[in-house]
Image 1: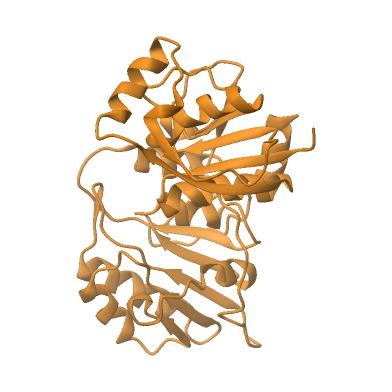
Image 2: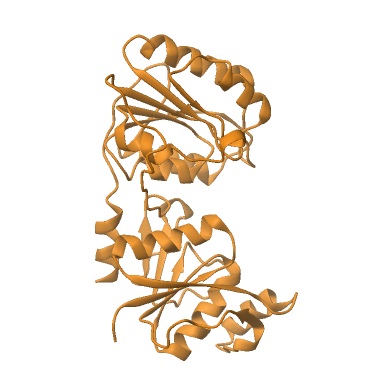
Length: 301
């Protein structure tokens, strides 16, 4: 049977993109289908049935499968894990879970977990130091003659708050260091607060993209050409992309933490391994990259 992947999507872009990245890194053909619980209580019952080794397709709805044969069935997100096991059995394929499938039995053929989730050590669990991503520059931003400094501003979440004064201080310091010698390119993100977008827009940088106005993502282009990229600490996805693609040095701009979290452990772990530098007024050029393609091919060998 040829190598072809069936990707189950719960409709969440962050989950779906990790599964797509897996297929692209492996160079594997794939089909993407939507799956959702058939009943409001399906998820809870699926966890119970999984523990009892009962696998019933009637608990979820799924689109018609484009192919009849697959080598792997991949799920990312809690509503896809049970269907992935059911379909893998039906299709005589291997089951793959993206991220640690908490609540379910860890008996997938392969689990690709993030290291900061502290996964248990067992042969079918492979820990990755970053979130899985596949970065593709789009030509939204193009460099000129001068070296480039990229700035990526995220937003608030359950772990971090984003204070205007702190971001302003970061932007002032970056401008003072690089304004004369470099092209400074900055972008906001889907979660950037309006007041922070207004602050960013007030600077006379060489390139500014306000996400709420353009709905474009120049981050892959920054990573492809920048000498150094500054990224706020709130997004493990953005940081993961930065330390696994391109040649840019990566500097994380620390934010005010509301609580201890795995986000902080994630960043601190990457700094210890010298994939990035946490900004402390100085800039250290750390350009080490996580080779995701190698790690994934090794996991699938």
